[in-house]
Each structure stands twice: as structure tokens, then as C-alpha cells.
Image (cartoon, rainbow over all chains, first blue to last red; front, side, top):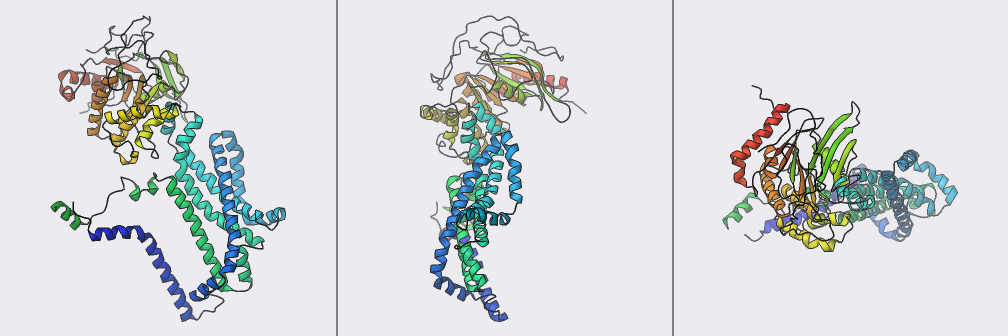
Length: 287
Length: 319
């Protein structure tokens, strides 16, 4: 067998990093376009600041931004965890009991038609200006996809699998634990990934309605002062925060369900196949 | 060579009187049973040969499975579906019985009822002498789709049978290992189902059905999802595996050669509503091999069964 050729090693390395290289390339192009668009069209500073100006503000005002970051993070995380803690048991209840489903499913759907922005002021009246109402709004927005996706996942187990588990002597609890729930995990994670983005939105919405701290609060202050540079800087920080949270859930998914098709390389097989070029194949057969 | 019913629509009748015969216990081969499973089958049939022509299996109190007047009707949007209509037959312990019939004749329903996974409309199913009220505990079941769990390794999948029965996995690990080796999957214990081919996965499913050493094995077209070559190989492997332990097997298939090759007796079912059309005795000597597939006796049996289907109108020779 021929030793791995240099081109094959390079290709393997490329395969690992090309997921990052392309987006970074695209972003770089965008930033350049941004910069030159301002120059060419002579855009005013308060409408669209230059990329460099935004970067300067980010560095100069970092202490402020960082200080406001933590309350927002807290709101997002707690709201999200609450959404999971309430959402998943609710979904299990819906699947397990027809009565429970008939009672709560309609209420669940109705609860989603009420715009959370509309109830945010109400929560403010009830819970004050602190972090609690923001956590509740984040929870309220995030928990619905978790419930729905969990229900779908639990219900999508093939009947054959349940039949077999029962034929193997499983009672309702052990069939749920060992068969139904693991089967539903890919769906559940789908819901979790959507929910984390919604929890972020929820926290910011809460802060818009009334707050004294947080990144949403900072956005309001910046827009009030027409400090577009700070506005941009805060938005960028928020976006990065959202990406970090999403990647965290994605990582949790990869660690929890490495067996699922979505996680395996190429969607199946032993995952050890390499794409060889025609020349390499010929080389190998000659040896 | 073949005993059968008159080709009428009258259902197969069970034989009446119970006579206590004493048969010798036979448990041989590598797949030795563990004590805590109930392989205390007191009466065991040595071969599939029926001493009383025309009466089907003797309805001794040692019958492994007794089905009498079993009827299954599914309610549906239109007219109710009569899946099974007064099915009656017995299966003696240690017998390999195939249930052969066209699509929709209710063979899978029959298996589900024996396993206790569905509720019957009328009639009675007795397994090991006691009525089937819910999922039966002392069975091994193999479906057409292997239904292995991708999040478990192959040996963990086999041991799922043990876990769901609330027994200790550690006690059965060695047995699971031996079973996997005996079907040619040594070295694949710690791999995942998605790394195996269809035939290999089905072998794992068969090991899973055998790990707790049940006296009865129910198989619903287990080779149906496999390609023709793998099917033939699995057929022969199953026969030699069965020869080692001589369990009672109910084997659903729609392949006539498969039924003839594997069984002691074939129950031919009519199209919906499913009734027992005929019972065919297969007394070809065992162990059976590839050569048997071309022997005149084998072909005569196949032809005989095919004739039944032709009589029922399943095949029509339109020229």
C-alpha cells in the first residue's frame, strides 16, 4: 500500500477547515464592500459607520459592553433552561396521556398566538424591572419549538420498534427510556437548536420593553444618542453571542447522538472512506 | 407424503381428545440454556411427523401453541376487515412450522396475536398451555425489518432483550457473544448496526431473539428485506442453527421453497379472510442441504403447495 501522498493529506486537512474558510472569506468580502461603499457613496457617519470605526468603538467601549453582556447572558441561559425543564416533560405528558393532550395542547397553541411583545409590559407590571420578566419572556418564546419537536420525535418511533420492545418484555417505562426517548433525541435537538435562537430574541425583547441593564438596554441607549457605531458594535457582540450559544447546543448534540445519520460523515457507512483521485487509485494498484 | 384437507372452505379442525404422551427432552448443541429461563418443556416432539393422518398436530397438553377458532376483525373506515376467520391449529414443541400464504391473508396478524401484541376479536390462543392475554414473555420475535437501535452497539442490541426483561446483562454477555460468533459476526460486537449490511443486521436480530433461550421463536418474513442470495444463505444458516436447539418455530413466509426447506409442516392459508386452507407435512430428512433444493421430493412438495395456490386462484395460468 502506497504511503499517504502529500495531496491526500492536504485534501484531508482542507476537508476539516473548509467549513470555516468559506464563511470567513465571505465575511471579509462583505466588510471590504462595506468600507468601499461608504467611500464611494459618501455615506454619513451616523447612518453607516466605517468598519474601522466600529472596531475602534468595540475596543474602546469594551468595558461597558462587557458589563452589559452578563445580565443578557444570564437572562438567555435561565430562560432557555426553564424552557427545556418545562417543555420536555410537557411533551412527554402529551404523548403519554390522551387526556393530558386534549387538555393542554389547545392551550399550548393558543399561548403561541399571543405576541410575546404584547405581554412583556404585563410581565413588567407583575415582576418589575429586574431580570425575572426577561427570563420569563425568553422562556415563553423558546419553549414552544421544544415541545412540538419533542412530541413529533416521540411519536415518530416506528410501531415495529415498540412492538418488538414490548415483545421483549418491556413495560411502558422501560420502553420509553430505552427506545422511545433515544429515538426522539435527534428531533429534540432540532427543537433545542431553534429554541436557543428564540431565547436570545426573547431576552432582547424583554430588555427593549423596560430595563436598566443588558445589551438590549445598550442598544436603546445607543440608538437614542444616534451613536450608530456603538449600535453596530453591540449588534456584532450580540450576534457572536448567539453563534456561541448555538454552537454549544450543536456540540451537545454531537456528543449526545453521535450515532445519528446527521452526525456521521457522509450520512452513513463506516465513515472511513476517502475519495481517491484516479491517479492515486492507479498508483495503489501498481504497488 | 402430504396430508391435507379437502379443498373446501371449511376451517381446519383441531383434534379432540387429549392424550398424555411422554416424549424425551432434547436440548443439544452449543446454545445451552440458562437455568432461570423456563426451558422446562416437559413434552417435546422429536420430529415433525404426525402419527395421526388428517388431524393436524396432536392436541396434547404438551402442545407448545394451540390456536382455536381465532378470528380477527379490524374496524376500518369502510367495511370491517376480516383478517382471520376461525383459524385453528396446534404446534407441538420443537416443531418448525411455516405459515405460508398470499399478501393480506393475515399471517402477520396471526403472529402478532400469538405474541400477544394485538387483541383478538374471538377465539383462543394458548402458549405453553396458558392463555395469551398480553405480550408474551417467553418468546423470541424476529420481524422483517431488523429494528436494531443505532445508538447501541451490536452486542448491546442483543442484550436489550435481557435488559427489557429486567435481568442482569452481565450474566448473558457471554451467551450473546457466543451467539454472534455462531452466526459469523465475531469481531462485530462493538460495532454499530449502521455499519453492517442487511443480512448481518438480521443475524443480530436473530441473536437478540435467542439470547434469553426462549422455547418458542416467532419469525415474520425475516428474510423478506434481503436480496435473493443472502436469503438462501440465511435460510441454510437458520436451519443449522435450529438443528442445534430444536426450538418451536412459527415462520411466516410467502416463499414456497423457503417454507419447504425449513419446515416440518406448512400451514397454507387462503387469501383474506385468512383461513387454514391446507396443512402440508414435510418429512424430508434433516439436516437439509443445498442439494435438497433440486431433489425430486423437494420439487414435488413445492408443486403440491403451488397447486393449492392455484386451486385458490392465487396463480392463474393465463395464456
